[in-house]
Length: 219
Image (cartoon, rainbow, N blue to C red; front, top):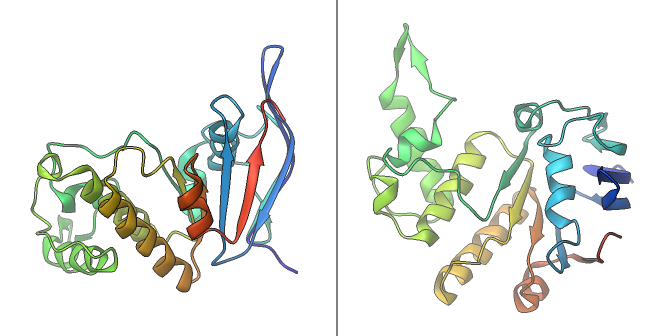
């Protein structure tokens, strides 16, 4: 079988401490893999290795994505390959609009000028994909946390994401917002987008996952 992602024997140390110790992980397109574990068990560190936040050479092991060996030096390298991570602390710029956040660093221009018409149409389609009925001109700081989470997903979709990593995505969400998010993940899954879901909430993990991994402390 040809896997979308294979992480082989990943080890990441900080001084004398092994934060991740010889971990392997693989998943296919459209698969949801959840990683559970206590704080300090290496879940987030493993994902930072995958995303290039910890660059190639700072860890041992191999990462293969879509048949290619990944040697990222920066998170931008993995974003170009179609890997996106949404942290518990969202990375949106609160004083900018939804449109400006989604296209930040990926603006569309025409004849040397920003093409707001094209970006607005694209933004509306992305918001529809995540079931958000808001104006692209809405200031992100005026949105609730659940809506901001969905804007982050829309931003990832704009980057042609193939693998979406969600790190404790429902930590600040209501029960209703959580249900909406899980429905969005199922829809992304149906469209072939893989997901790594990091959570300690077992009811969510059981509801959304094809595979569940348990990270032990430093193992």
